[in-house]
Image 1 (cartoon, rainbow, N blue to C red):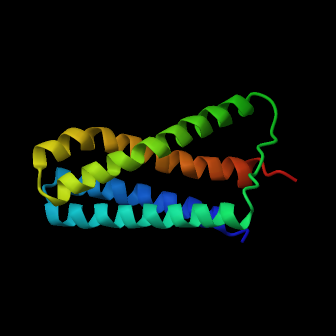
Image 2 (cartoon, helix red, strand yellow; image 1 turned 180 degrees about the vertical axis):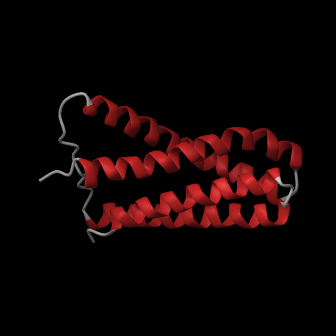
Length: 141
């Protein structure tokens, strides 16, 4: 399933667009639409997670190596490591933020969302960047 990495990058990009749209909607006080876009972002992120796990299962845990050399190598690994750590960290934050929002616990929701949103955006954007580094800009032979 060589197409799964591209699907994963697309799902990350869609999640990012949904997050930005939801952010704009809440700034406009359009709470109901904001809620739907955030639910859509969660569904897209869960779909990504399923495809990510499926990709690693089908590849029997074999990972794609980043083979580029020179100054780009530490840049890539800085992005990859920060992406990986924050991708793990963001899961409970998203769950708590979503739960508080759905239960209309507005103060708690706002307090954690101010951290969840930028971290989730970072994970979405860097997920796409990791794909481009590995499969488009510096593909291994």
